[in-house]
Length: 430
Image (cartoon, rainbow, N blue to C red; front, side):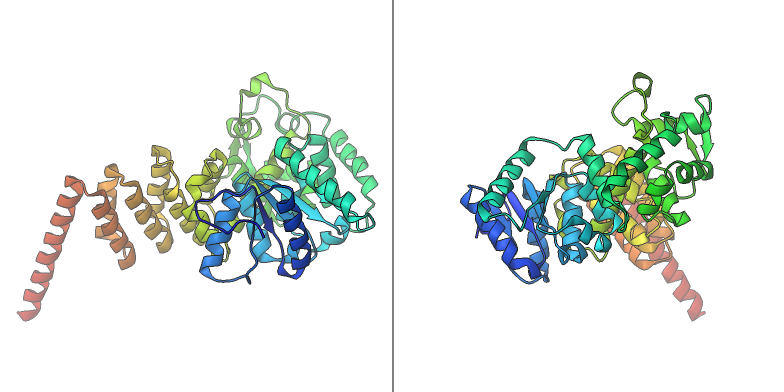
């Protein structure tokens, strides 16, 4: 059945599936083994800490992540967590199905559709013989290892996955053309604000997104005003209370790898970047939320990602409206190999967070960073935070830092505390 899982192993292929599809999984697993691939697959029941650790490590360690796409797997929380982890750890994802994709759409959420729109699928034909399907499958595996999906194929996938159930797929090209014509083939900022405007109100940006991409944002479940704003905050890397967007922030988002003055922005380039950014956000929140089945192992193995995208996404999760996600992102950030001044400064800001678990997480993260230049700030938290657990976390951080300044600061505070307690007792006796 493929190799036995070991923590330090790297597997060519990991198979994610619903246990209701075990028979199909075993056929695919055996076919891969027969063709020289190393395979890891879970054959135990879902549940238990050891299972979660193993499955998370398997996702992070694989070369190709095969997702057996059925009506059972697309509605499985475990499978969605695994696919999201594969997405943020930049794995080659290969969905395999015998089903009609259109039949699966009603049970797919927007996050899963976005992930699947960026990858090549293997749609096996139940009418064909096994040998023909097997050859197609193995060839697709090899192709996936050595090539990327073209932009035209991504657009085609997107149009299929985000078409309405009662809408013929052939009409998608017409809808895309109508949207492009309405945009006049100009960049989003230029056509809506002009090239001389350096700052735009966030509410205006959201208004023009609704106007220009009405069909798409509705299909992405962004009709809710807050959901659309949350996407914009993530994409432009804005604080939760932001009210405006600068042209520089816009350019940094649309042109992440170069000078915007050297490129011409296409009509849909902004929205393509929005969809990609929104997909990363949904995947990150799927992996790192409190209910995630792969969260713990993802935190423990973050240094293996070696991805700037993951690091930047964690920075953005620190601004999430959900305090649980802010706390988990903070701890996760401390597990990465990247312990630079930017990471440290973002964690220090969380020491003033309104949520006590976030403040506690920030103290523990600084303990791991051994950030000696934060001693005064941590001493302030120890002396002034109203929550005892946060104060104790600050003490742990100071002990971990262990510099003479930290030790002396703790000694002084402890001495003063003892003296105040003694004075209070003496006052009561009198």
